[in-house]
Length: 310
Image 1 (cartoon, helix red, strand yellow):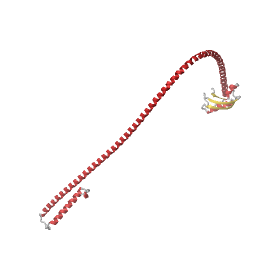
Image 2 (cartoon, one colour):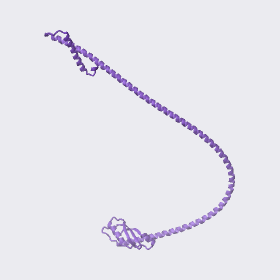
Image 3 (spheres, rainbow, N blue to C red):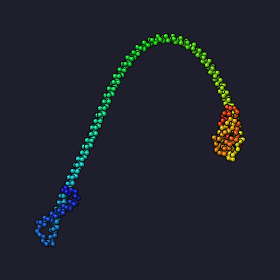
Image 4 (cartoon, rainbow, N blue to C red):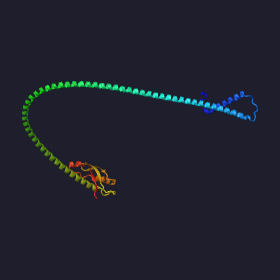
């Protein structure tokens, strides 16, 4: 049956049917007398014989089908057993892995416990040593304190005698200090009067400097006014001028008021007006610079706003 285990059932049926028919025909041919001409009724008998043969073929086919089903059922059983065995083996392997993992975890846990115990013992030993050192230190400190107490008592007695002697010395020093304080106060009073005199002189100088500065500022203002008027007299109004225009001009002069440079440092927005203002400053040279040297020094280089009236 192993040879035909992979064949379809219909093919097996066909083979079995043909084999059975061939066997029946051979048997009939060997054991039967030579055929005689058949009468008109003989076909009925032949049909019955063929019917019997077909029943045998059907029986054989059922038997073969039962064997095939039994074989397939056996194979299915073997397959289920094999799958069950494979599941059992996989489960066993899983349990072995889990057991190995559990043992590894247990080993790690034991190592951690051992390490923790070693650390605990080391910490305990360290604490004992520290406590021993602390007690030794306390004993040393106690002895040192006792020694210091005796020395302090000795020093206290010496200090007591020294204080009595110092008190007398202090009294003499205080007397001398009172006299020195009186002399110091007298000297301070003299210094205070000198400082007040100096402050008065400084205030007078400051007031004089302030008055001088105001006088200089007035001279500068008057000079700027004169310069502005002189420039306006030399100014030629451009066609694009509009009332209210102004610009700032930076002027540099030499002693005597001669203009060596004049440039616009803040424009009016009208280039023609700016140029006319700079030209007017140059035409107005020499400018009326004050004769006072201190005031004239402020006109070496100065700026003024040119804003013509009207």
